[in-house]
Length: 483
Image 1 (cartoon, rainbow, N blue to C red):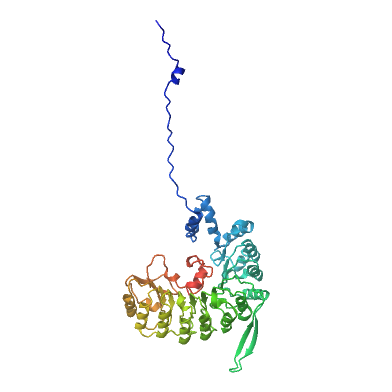
Image 2: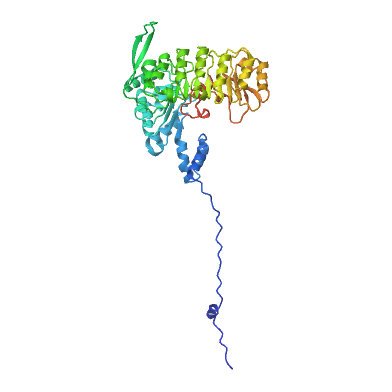
């Protein structure tokens, strides 16, 4: 009997069929690739929301890379403590200081901190400002208000003009001390004064000036200049010299300055601004004539914003207004304020004929319009108008104001009317219009439109740094909208 040999367990395994184990890999969904430029574009819409931007820096390295330059693009300060922190970091940190494009000191204040002006001078010294300016090698805009004017010395101005090679915007709003006027005069002396040649016209024995051009232009790159409410600055020795060295300005705010016709004549004959200016503000300039204003504006080719408003009735004549409204720039006007000038039905017709397509904000305060029909027909013919200043217009009454609003078509763009307090208090809500009770110095009848504040649509100061009305300091808002 033959014996049966059973295979060992090891041999038994050799005869087993091969079984391949299939290991399932986890399914990875395709994550869409977002180009960096799209991320940068989306994040740029958050430029006014510092808290959200700060949170975005913690998302990942990519977000941090794109958000940090946006965070540091514009730096502004309200109190000494934050300024001190910034000064200590900026002077020692070159990488981040190179990201700063706008140094905004317009909102600096010690109000409520029980600190005097001498305390401010200890916090923001001229030497600290000089160190910061020298660290911010890519600086393009510098703005400061009257709170810090004692710190704006000749040495600080010299660094701004001669060492900040990328500077494009300077805003010295409200600086009216003799110290600042002297510092600016010293600066223009170093830059090279404009030489004036005085002579008399043989026909009418009138005193006239001619100008001798400066040798070397110091600020050819400067595009925006604001001397808003700086009445202390000398016209001939300082303002003319600054303009001579800044021949390519696009934004110029001389509102409230002590200038005469000589400044306007100089702009026409000695600079390039008739070709470059897009924004011009001459509001509340007491010593300039109607003819000189019209002559300058008629030579300008690209103006979009023009403000010659004056609340003391230094009127531009009807003839000169029509000259302005038939100038090459008239078709481009988006914001036009000719308040307190000699505004007649003929002037309204000139606006209607030449500015219909582009004009959005219009100031015609104290217009000499006696018939409501002229105003009614004008508004119907201007469907793009969003804001109009009708303060002091004699034909307006509560009854015909409501009539005008009822006659406007629903698709009309008008959403804000500025008018006198006495009239506004007699009006009631109608078709979505109501009195805005939040304002005390300027009075508005407005529609409720999301994202639009009635007191932030028609400025009387140029925002030369383009910081936006909501980001302006309180003092800049005061000068811009509340007076």
